[in-house]
Amino acid sequence: MAAAMQLRCWGGDWGLPSVHNESLVVLAYAKFSGAKVNVSPIDWTWKTLTATVPELVCGDTSVKEPSQILNFLRKQRFNADYELSARQGADTMAYIALLQEKLQPALLHTFWLDAENYGSVTRPWFASRSPFPLNFLVPGRHADSARSRILLTRGESRQCRITELEGKVKKGGFKNFKTTLKKKTEFVLVILSPLYQLYGDAKECLNLLSYRLGTASYFFGNLPTSLDAFVFGFVAPLHKARLPNSPLQSHLRQLENLTHFCDNILADYFNSAQPCLPPSVQETMDANLQKLTQLVNKESNLIEKMDDNLRSSPQHKPHRPEPKPGLLVEKSSAPA
Image 1 (cartoon, rainbow, N blue to C red):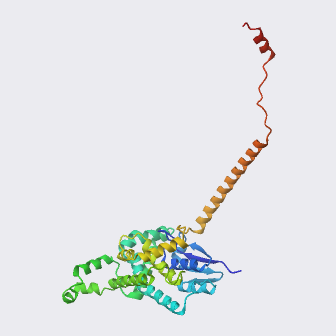
Image 2 (image 1 turned 30 degrees about the vertical axis):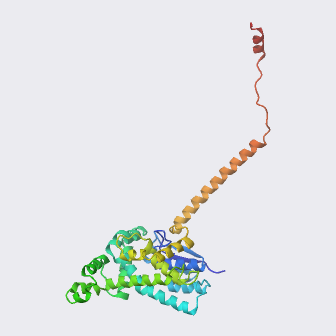
Image 3 (image 1 turned 180 degrees about the vertical axis):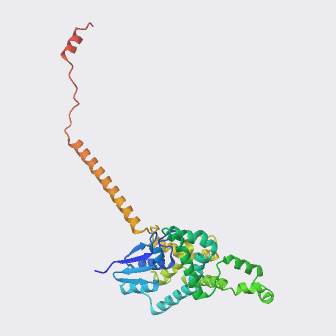
């Protein structure tokens, strides 16, 4: 008998089974491939500081990183790409690499390094899912990790709002770019800014995905594959989160086929749309529900027995006490 598989990940919110991009990739692929995975959210536990998610545990084996987890599931005969041709398999690898190189850094900056989004959405959410005193440490550690990943892939990235740079670009104007290139040094620095390029590449990546998807439900045929899992995992949180400042989210909302793509997967594969609860909370709720069900069943059985007893008891005319003889004499002797 195969060992049970347990997936450790961040819990859900915003109508998503998980708010964490890479955790969402693995959850989607497990649904697509039919893998039975027990989801174990790390919310409200000490693992919020120590765990590396997503992490798939199967017996004595522990696998991390989405690509490694997907390979492990394929070896267990849970393969959502079995119908793909060699060309489609190569395209899948190319698009996933594009997502990781072009879109993921911008998503990390949007949620973790944009000061307004981090202060009003990201930091409060992760702090509220971490026990005291980790709620003071976990958000900052994740922000540092996001900054490091961006530095490794894209170079320097300031913790500021991208709208500041876009405002400068609009002020300089693109029509007179060649004539003002030598004069407006600030405008040139903005155009060459790593942050501006980061968001520009992310928007181009979304445009390419939207063009490749077209009017189809999935990227290859009528069934979702690993590419659909990666696109869903990266795009769905950007689509569902209520961010106060995100030109990238505004750009995504103009690509209706991508937003419909995310909504359809949520409806078809995650129809409950309920956040994952930690095992302790879920077990408590199940125990209370079981007790309530038992109490209702006992009351129902008692009512049935009472009803059966009433129906099976012999029916008699109501008993009325006979009048006493003295009263009858008095009535008969009374004057008319």
